[in-house]
Length: 311
Ligand code: AMP
Image (cartoon, rainbow, N blue to C red; front, top):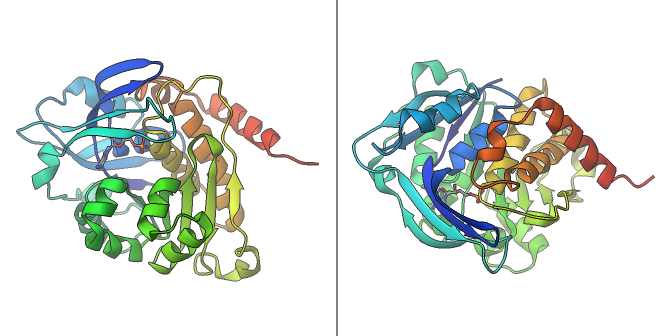
């Protein structure tokens, strides 16, 4: 099954305790696509400027990602500058330049129309909604967002949340969105805003999924408890940028690769999300995600199982 993803394709300048990287290829849709490409076909919708060359596009193409929906226009690509000097689990944003995204009007190529899975990666909720409306028949829609959109574009975001099967955000964003510092209460409030499930990414501590009883109606007795997937304890996190998007790519990519989306498949997908997030942080930018093998992914998946196995 193919996934259609809309989100930022960007240049990032990043500083972490391990060093600095200037203008490396980034963006939520980039990390998501690379990660999901190990599981299923991926088609991307985004806009880039003249600074985005064939060399950057080849990073996506080499992973078989369909870039026919990547529009090239005059101007500069999305640019983000962030650092993690105080806390590796939370980026500090120093600069966000939307640039060509400011006047972007997403158009879906006819070749993308049969995509069954839709991922609304982090970008202006108005653009997420525009793409959602053009894909009324998709089987499953998940999405992401961040502080920038939660605080400044709330009403638009709330409309997007109503139509989601799953919302993937980190714990700080969940607490901000719900205006509640207790994660369980925040999750209850967010599920009432519309998403059928909420996956809270907890950085180096893994991820927790909360369910409404609308996603798997036959399983309601198993849905009252959240589900927790681990993260891999690493001795060095080189660059946490894109960990959340890589988690989302592994999670959604695995879901889309399965015949049916059941609760058991959803739980396994959370583990694959953690696996892909753990690879992403081992190098600056997208470097580690560009050259993985399915064998490495499966070996790490086995490690994740081992980590959380009790008997
Ligand atoms: P994360 O997975 O949360 O670490 O996502 C990091 C990526 O998000 C970076 O590659 C940035 O280019 C991108 N990003 C940062 N701010 C925004 C924003 N306001 N909207 C969309 N994408 C963003």
